Length: 476
Image (cartoon, rainbow, N blue to C red; front, side, top):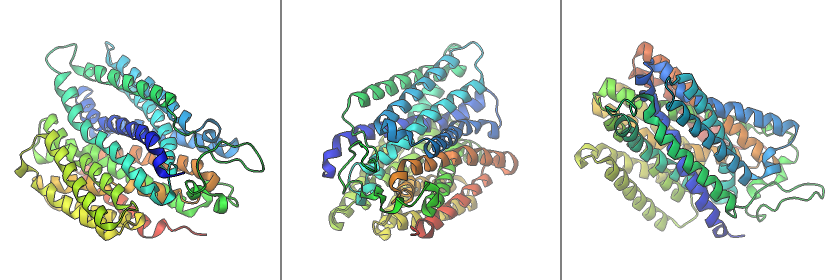
């Protein structure tokens, strides 16, 4: 079956990636908001990310234990039904947010519980949607497809800081005592609940293939895809393995996911605080506009990465990559409303990002290693410099974060065969990094200052550089 046969389901899944990226990035705006409303320290405010991302670890661990001792749940219910379950769970979490925000005495711990439930729903989406996108087509272009979907995920994260900062800090937080305080997040999360419910119904009614692993020993199986489409998941290697944990490249990939998510989320979570305390950008809405360049850079990089790792000829590929870079910058520039002279440094980083992709020669592992190395250099420069020069260094990290999740994920689940879904759950489990690293950076910020606390993500990118250049090698 040709990859083009999957265009419709991939389109629906891409819309799903967009909205879950949008909601995830709203956490970055909740941190300074709850810090103000509930008078929290940097460490306490970063518990927003702890509650959200701890759900990934807890639910994925349960999933792994169930799959190992009883059987893979997704193999029984199918990827499509798992996605619907995730959307319904996330809908319930947004409704819980709505209910608590409207109470007379809103509680920060209750909001944290709602965030944990939201993370639970997104865990189902991560376990099911990422491998499903990888499987809907040929294995050679799996990184390209996942980078494309992750690109729309980043489009959501690009828009979220601008929309979220305006809606939460301005539109629903004026002088009206009802609309101020915790009530500022009430209507936005009700709207998100409606969108998630609509997506669940749409996917239920769609013809997304209910991909499952073929049964063995003559058992009746569920058709999944052509042999060429799922060869990346063939059982030639997996047949002698009893668990996904027996694959070193997967185990190393688990830690790569931990450090990638931890580093990316820690930077995004503390950028607004950094801009207010170290750069002098006081207004949250202005900080949100700058934050859009961090997440927008990831969006551009993922779209460009999708082209870079595709199988089209180089002349056409490099032309499209340049066009997407220009269009991506135009989108961010138009929605943030800055003057061109204010964002000139970002143009320089876009050029560097383009040539880094060219130097990587369409190899996912090489791209990962090079990008991690560049991020280490950017973080060191951010610590050395002050003011706007330092800010643009840290914002540029988003450009080179872009392909990391997709590349680590596809590199880690290669040749897992029947253990693919189990391996996916283990990778999603390690999104725990988003729960651990941000509070640690918040603790550092309380003790050594917000600026110097950004030294912590350097450790994350050192490991990612090693995984790209060495750790992802499949050991037979």
